[in-house]
Length: 330
Image 1: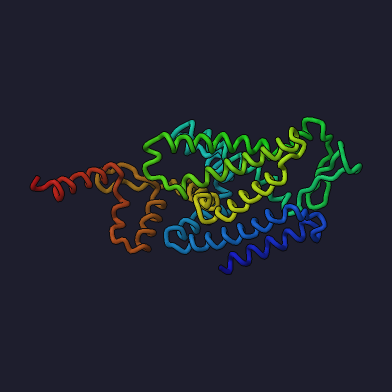
Image 2: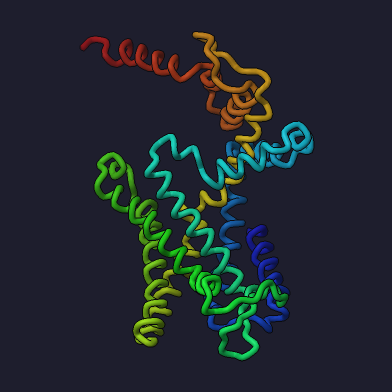
């Protein structure tokens, strides 16, 4: 709770300072800014609860310890940037499951990243567009009150600058629709899915993106017809999604960086390999196996020796136990 309150207060101070004492703050975007403050509180609170469990705490310590290790930086200076790019950015581990799922996930990921980079600074008053004439077409792009670049609103650069959220919406709609259709048609995917956990996030992304595109459609083709209703609908969808984010499936966004650190931990500790105690085949790095074993001991599971057995031998042992104990007498 304390971490959440501190994070929210820090963000409020950053909004005040970044908008130059609220001078550049747009009151029309206040609901988004307020929702982002609650989002910061929720993520910090949920994160502290998450790392309070033995497994997550060990993942957090080992992951961030490996990422911030000066020794690792000296020994493998390109390892962390490479893993951030491949594991966090391009998420190549998803490609091993399905190329189409990887492509759809990339569409959602980069669409959300683009939208976040535009929406949050705008709603906080950090990012503004000003024109010396008041109506264009020459505009200045400002960050924290300092001019970054000047462009013509009628040029290609100007179109991209003012329609960045539309481009992000198209990416998100394409990716989210793929996963939504897959969950409706694929019986395997639909077996264990839950409406609130698996389908609501996809529907929220689609609703936000569609209503955002409709705002542009209204202003360009309908001369503002229905704009106020669409603006309220879009705002409600965004605010509710931001409030939902820390307590649903989207929370894995905050968890993922620690997993990148764990991948770095495995990479930097590749010196010795733990063999299977049954067949002798390599399992993983000794440090990683011992870390997993320590987590099981923290949880007092009482069978931490099982991590010293490779997956194949585990399956054989389970099969033999099933045949001996369950099938006996049938």
